[in-house]
Length: 160
Image (cartoon, rainbow, N blue to C red; front, side, top):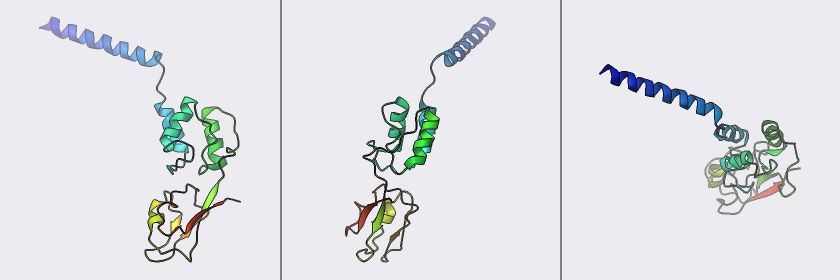
C-alpha cells in the first residue's frame, strides 16, 4: 500500500514540475494583451473599424493584421494609448474615418426612444413621447442610433 502512495505522489510531483517548466518555457497566450487592448477601446460595438465589435478589433490589433487608427469613436487619444501599449508609432486617424456626431432634427422627433435605447454611451436624452437631443460631447459617432429611428430624424454631422 505504501508503495502505491509513494508512486502516485512521485508521479504527481513530476507532473507538477513538468507543467511548471512548460508554462515558463512555452510562449504565453495573447489573451491578456487582447483584454488590455479591448479595455482601451470605447466599447461602442459600432463596426466602423471593419470588425464586428471591439473585441475582434482588439484581437486583430494584437495579431498585427489591423491598423491602430481605425476607431473613430475612440479618436486620436485611443490611437495614442494603443500605440503606447503595442509599441507602435502614433498615426492619425485613417482618412476614410471621419469623426462625426449624431444630430436629431427635433421638429421631426416623435419621442419613440429607439435611438436612446440603441446608444451605447447614453449620449441621447429625452423621455418617451417627448423630443430627444444628443449630448454632443458624449456622442462617439458610432451611428448605431440612425437605423432604429422610424422617422429618419437623425443624421450624422462631421465633427469640427
